[in-house]
Image (cartoon, rainbow, N blue to C red):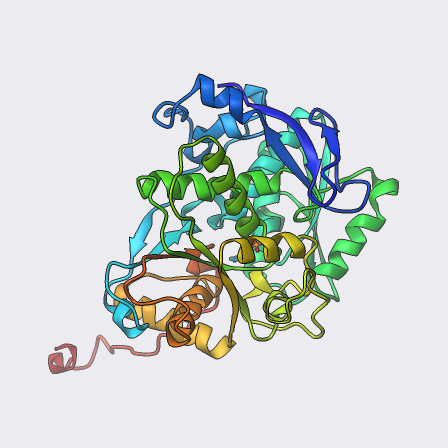
Length: 407
Ligand SMILES: *Cc1c(COP(=O)(O)O)cnc(C)c1O
């Protein structure tokens, strides 16, 4: 199916940029957003027939994605990610069974939702004829870039903080990217990518510094609309680092509203951060439009250890427009909540996903939402990539076994 893309627009000034050229940020250093001919689309298609049923996962939404050449739609077998309601743990978090639903993004290629954004960024890079892509990453974005770039026949160079979980660093390298550890945080890695642009000729695919990762992430909003039969939940809890997914979903809802396909109230967008790195929470509470650099950022939830976000004003706008808020939770709460949900319900979340569940509990306690509200928690990666508590019990096969212990 054809793409209804028309042009790009600066998110700060609205200045128009052509769609078929290579872009990073706008002239004023702000993210560029993709625009579509929604009027034309509305007259051509309906809510019932706009999806390409035979396409893998989010590629079903290709009318509202920027790629126009079929051979540039790179795929590693994307899937529509399932909605899994919490059972026993729902009440333990202060809610009601059936009302707390996890969107489990860990089922995507490379085990995280970074696949959505990087699949689109690599596909557009392919369409525009780019050959070499570079990225700063806390792990999952680098893995997704490595996999999709190799699949598309491109070179990838990846810079990670030197305390990035080893499994992430190794999966990035094994999937063919030239991989480097940097003695700094993700924003330091980002500076290296930016500074090397002229000399290496690589294209910078940092979050929101190119226009297409957000288009991939927005498909979470389309999926939710379809899966919930076009009735939005009361709130969405999103573990917020660079904020691409939160901004992306808000953009998706706006597009569906303009098409007239989504009616009624939109969800409160609730950004969850760790108290060790909470620049958006601080800016939200202080009523600021931008979030200054968070010093000495630390959290076990490495995917949300982002001390400064270029799309900060877009995150804050989406939260405020949706009547949502931003909440911080401690690392200790995050890990306790991960363990609780795994043990009670058999659902292994990543720490970032567990942070949204801890954030839910905090929102209930603060009366921001009520137990009767239907909420979506985003589990953005498979829990299998993160350290787990040791298993210590053993059996001696040569000794008499006391079977009473198993009852
Ligand atoms: C990147 C990442 C996030 C944060 O996503 P943004 O859209 O960049 O805010 C959350 N959780 C995990 C597991 C991630 O990899």
